[in-house]
Amino acid sequence: MLDQVLIKEFGKRIRQLHTGRSLSQEQLAELTGFHRTYIGMIERGEYNKIVDTLTKEKRSWLMSRIGSKNTTPELIVRSLVHRLGFRFRLHYKRLPGKPDLAFPGRKKVIFVHGCFWHGHEGCTKGRLPRSNLREWQTKIFKNRVRDKENLLQLKEDGWDALVIWQCELKDIETLIKRILIFFR
Ligand SMILES: [Zn+2]
Image 1 (cartoon, protein in one colour):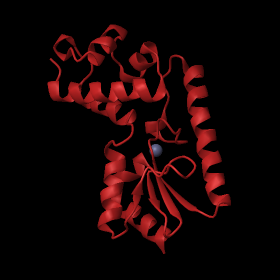
Image 2 (cartoon, rainbow, N blue to C red; image 1 turned 180 degrees about the vertical axis):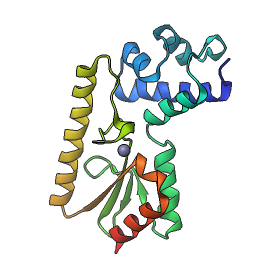
Image 3 (tube, helix red, strand yellow; image 1 turned 90 degrees about the horizontal axis):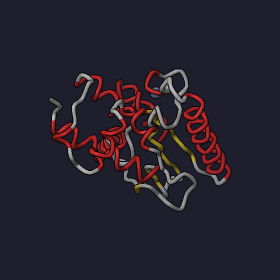
Image 4 (spheres, helix red, strand yellow; image 1 turned 180 degrees about the horizontal axis):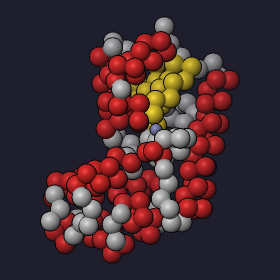
């Protein structure tokens, strides 16, 4: 039997993915490791009908891989930057790519990138599902191109950008150093 709290959280993520990125049920099934028929049930909140074939660890890993807006990595970075004494604006819409954290007075921005969605090269969290590989490659490639364009545009407009990858959160001390150097 699946942990009900876990699956509720998971359902929320799936709904976010559905609305935010227009994924088909097949794609969602593939990403989440759930059978396709379960995706609809999760979306409708019928958690008690779900039988999860994955272990709790594998399930947590999948969830971390498909994180979206306001998920843990971004929250961790926010509180970290806040504790370091820097004040910021969230999801600054006026700038290319709507940076997750913006520091208008300093003309600096920070992006927190999920390794999967933004295609972190050489990173295990960025690994694509094996089936429909072509389709995923196209999708993630587009995200990467867009990210690059946004960074270029920001640079042209005189903004400094720092990209923090989700996997960098494993080593907070190094991350803090990176952030402090960025603000120096
Ligand atoms: Zn990564």
